[in-house]
Length: 315
Image (cartoon, rainbow, N blue to C red; front, top):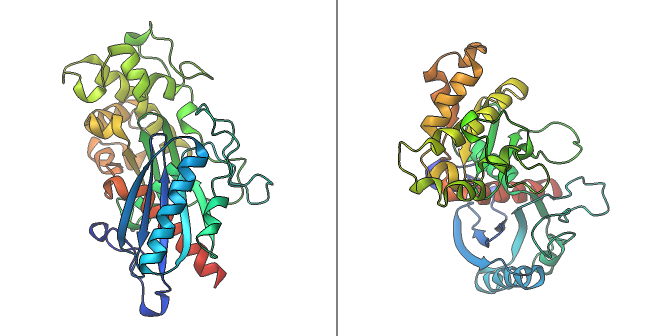
């Protein structure tokens, strides 16, 4: 069981304190490497700039080598990584990046380098999948039966937990089509695959392509805020209608840096139109759409949970 949000870690009994766990959050600009002690608390973290795959992953391996030399072996490692990823356990390329716009990273095996620093399990999920797990177990979704996590930043993605059986691949919610705002007719979108899908219209690069600055620096009355909130709200409404999670957590630099949650909530209320009884009133939606309780540690916490679960199954 995970600890309360303020503890940023796991609550484990003495019998379950098997040793230290490593966690990685791999992103387009940086990889964050962390080590949790036997109680599950994050004790060390190191930021590695994202460069070419070989250099980046080797730097991360060295972080864990030094951590093991200081404090003892790493029992397992959980990885939260940008995608798209091959996550089907029966696939020959499991743990590898699928074709990605990030130069040089397509086909890279993310897991294998870390087998040099642990003889325990090395497990991987998407960054947003791990963030969903972290918030569900220890953050804004703690005590609820299900949770969706949506990130709105350089990219847009989402995940719903818990998951059921095998899937085709992980969700790519950012590429859903959305109804275009009438005030936004002149913008073609930045997605190289779809142009004006949700990510193509509402991610960080799309905001800068239109208005020349980040959402956080736009004036409060700027129409861009309600335009972006309206696009994200369409995803909120779709999640409510398709997956029906008990709570949705919205993170990412565009949403949190721009203080966009109030506008997303209001727009979601309009899009749902009072159709779903649990979300008919604005106050219900205000509770349903939440900010991350774990802050920047959502994905790392989820990666630690993945690793500990894998270690428990092995032993």
